[in-house]
Image (cartoon, rainbow, N blue to C red; front, side):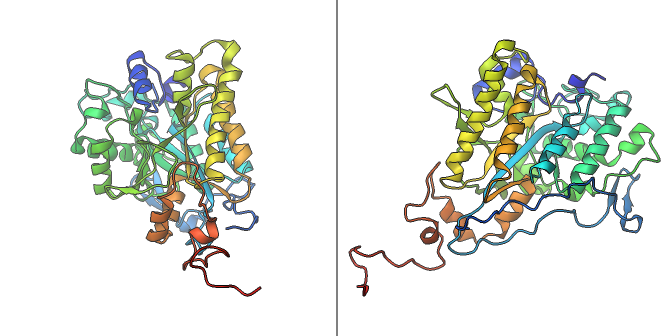
Length: 426
C-alpha cells in the first residue's frame, strides 16, 4: 500500500481543505533557574517487560504489563513557584510507512528529553482485505477516506507503538475513516455514532493479530481500553457530540477545539486541551498551531507547492511556534499545544520545522515536553484554586507583582511606600 494511503490522516481533498482553511481546523485530507525538564526516557532502546509480568488480553494483540515506564509522577505546584512551561507535540493518524517518520520522531523525542502523543488511526491496524470489518457510521462497510493498511505496514506500526509506549509516550486515537465535511462527515455524527466509532477504533487495535493472521509477534504492552483517554477529531469537526460520547466512555481530555494560549479548563467533564492560535510571521493574523493549517495558508490545497518557497514556509511555521512559545514562557506559562502529521508536505519543510522547535525548547530550563496524558495528570494534581487563578492571565500576560506574590500560599506583604502598608524599620 502506498505511503500516502497509510499515513494519510492529513490527506487533502479540495472540499475538505477549503472547509478546514475557512474554519481554522487542523485537517488531515519554580522561580529558581534550576532545570525542570521532564525526566527523559533512557537513551538505549527499551527492552520488553519480563515474561512473568505479561498478561495477554483477548487474542494476544494487547497485554497488561504493569504501569507504564518513564511516566513521571505529577506533583502539586508549591506556593510561590511559577508553573513549568508545558509543551505538547502530537501526531494525527500516527503510523509507520516507507517514510519512517514515526520511528524518526521517536528518536528526536528521546534525544531532546521529550515525550509525545501519537493519535493512532484504527484503520492503520486493519489490512485492506479485511476492510469490510469496518462499519463506519453513516457510510457503507469498508469505506475509509484514508484507506487501510497491509500486513507489513501493520507490523511496522505495531513495532513503533510498542517502543513509543515503553518510552513513556501516549497512544491516543484519531478514530478510523477520517470523514470530513458534509455527506456523513463526523460533524454530522450523533453521540451513538461516536461511541460506535470509538469502540471500533479500540477493537482494531485489540485484534490486529487475528485480522492479519499473525500468531508469534509480541503483543502491544498495554490494555488499550485503559490506555485510551483522549483524542483529536478529524478536521476538528463533530466536537460537541464527540465530547458527550468521550465522557461516557471514560476519556479525560479532548484536543479538537481552537483556543488562545491560555490555561486549560474542564469542559463537559473533560480537560479542554484545544489547539491554539500562534503568531504567523509575515502576516497580521494568527495561525492554528498545526502543520496542515500553515500549509493551507501557504500553498493552498497543493501539498507540494513552489519548491523555491519551501524553506520560507518551514521557517514561518518554526518561527511562529517559537514566538508562541516565548510569549507563554515569558508570560502566563500556559501550555503550548502543537499538532502535526507524519507527512512530507512541501518537501518535508514542516517536519524540519517541528524538529527544530523540539530541539530549541525541550531542553530549556523549566520546560516539560510531555504527552496530553501527562499534562492532564499534572492538571488533576493541582489545587483547583491555583488553576482558577492561572486562568485569569491573558495571552502572554505575566503576573504584575511576579509569580511569588501571584501564587503565594498567603497574601504577600505590601511593598514599601504602598498606601496602607505597615511601617518597616530600616
